[in-house]
Image 1: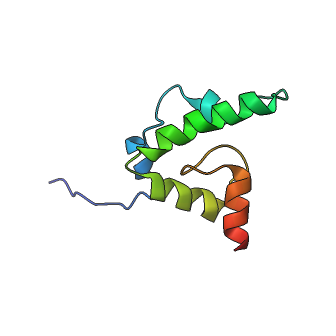
Image 2: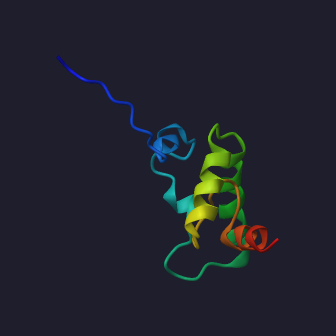
Length: 87
């Protein structure tokens, strides 16, 4: 006999995220400084992916709850999330 247990996995949303795969370069800043125009373009690419993502709210909640300081999460940059937390 096999018992089946449903465990709540708070990170299960990640498997359904639109950014799954090799997209980290758009969502996280490089290790070296980048020009403002390059940064803006990179962030806009990431936000476009987030705009169509079915789990965007869960992603943003995770970033805010964990205090994520880097990258685009839930369609927001780290500074945008900081302003949201402060409000």
